[in-house]
Image (cartoon, rainbow, N blue to C red; front, top):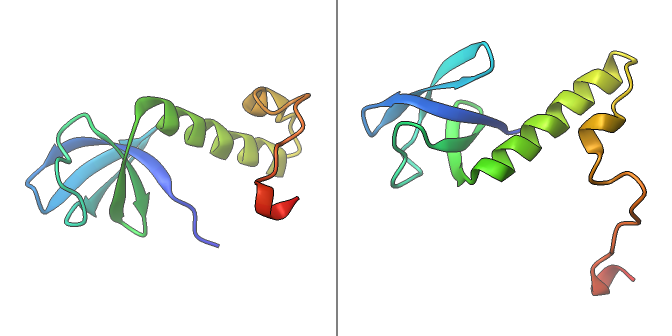
Length: 96
């Protein structure tokens, strides 16, 4: 399974960008994106930025990944998924 990591562009030359997430920094390709400027949030798969992210989307993805890590470490992960606790997910019509 491949997961995308939300990262923030720290510097870019238009072809690659130095991005960070927490303590991690890596140089990634931004050739698939237009308008990938310093400060932008991007979704990175295998060292390639594949999508620009809104701030809220980047935060929710980061929280979900933190929740998965907590669960894998045997810790309580409910706080990372507070928006899902006590809510029955609504299935799309084609899955009902």
